[in-house]
Image 1 (cartoon, rainbow, N blue to C red):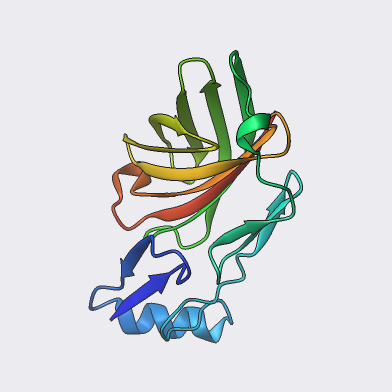
Image 2 (cartoon, rainbow, N blue to C red):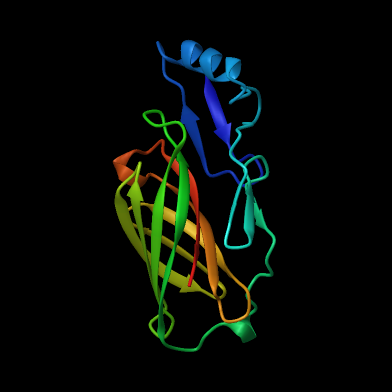
Length: 170
């Protein structure tokens, strides 16, 4: 049995390996926390810094995306916020996310601390960013001047089955 996470944006599959698959799925379903079908329905819709994440569609909403003309041309910025993650060992984890950005160099660093402790680095691509050094993550900047960043990640904490989202602001 495989539980597909974020059906609108295929991020990863969360395998529910035997012998835990049926008891885990039944327990979570009984709690109203999970519907196992073609997608996933979790009580995981959440908001921070003016953005909301819809776990069923895998999308953020509530703030305008930063346009190319609104992106800072230089300087550095430190963002702080939170993340939520789902993994076999911790189905509803969360913690603090910090995001360092060097707009001039076009680099980003994402650090997670809490239920998952890990860091990764990547690059700015237009008005978005992505990285695979450490674990995989991707996302976008929001608002004029890129004052908010949000994205999704997989493989954090050395757990290939860990998937999640982060929202940070400066």
